[in-house]
Length: 446
Image (tube, rainbow, N blue to C red):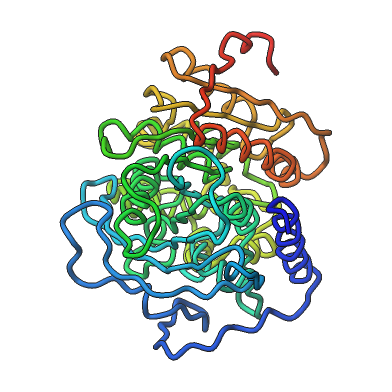
């Protein structure tokens, strides 16, 4: 069966499973496991693998542990299971405060041969928003694409992009980010440095995995949309200083939350209001000095929401917090955006999270839906402009789709319609084809 046909078949399988969950179908049966499991919250469990040891290795990207990871969706072929074999990973990184941190994820060795030039390439997939509960981790989503019970709804929607790359003979590493999966801390959602480091160290971890076909000579690409787009964008900026041993052949940056003050305003009152709680939880963990400000402004309902969201995935957060306004979480009825405007310390912290202040390493492709009002189009486009002004090799792609009532659909429509073109662009870079960029067209691009 041709690789493209197998990719379409697997994509249909993943999409069908997702749709079934959304329609209220029973969750897919969990694979049998002899592991001891740890309670994450609200009767939710994650495997003991995800609990980090007391001491981590010294080197960034060093493997802490690994084990086979059963894929829920796999097809038998003469060459072996398609799309490939997966390994669960835990590796060491460094967080934004310079402290060591454990990160979980996965490495997937493809069954398909690499038909491009040179050695088999490696792509790190940085997941989009999955939630803040440990059970939401992308590596768990490979094993259980749909997890649905009375407490949580987790959907591994990134599996489609992962399988698309595997079908083309590309090895894939997936990061769960700091604190998503790993049980020692909260996930530091949209923290620029934490995410960029986790992505870059996933490359190092994959290279060091015994039996992996990728080596230091393998071309490296990064692939991410939404939260993942912010993570790959940050990684492209941080690579020269943080990971000079990781040369980037190409980076796909889809709908990046580059300017969080604008994203905060865009998300508030939409289906994804819960993401504001994930951001605040993560920032208070990374910067405890902000906690007195939060205590001055967050009311009892807000504190309860933050505690609750710390254990939720994106699916159940949509049901619990859709269309709420953050003004319900504050003592004086102001929104979080209005509080940010009044608090210089918050403005300073969010300014440090801005992406676009550094030139990205290697060619980058920035895609954003022109009608995206959830992760606002204007701030994503501005990232491309900023990078162009800094001399980056930037290919900018405005995705033109009809504006609909739902901000969530305005955001996720481009994820699906542009994913194939994004993968093709990245595969060209991994094959050694040059990218000239199109910065010169920015003045006339929407």
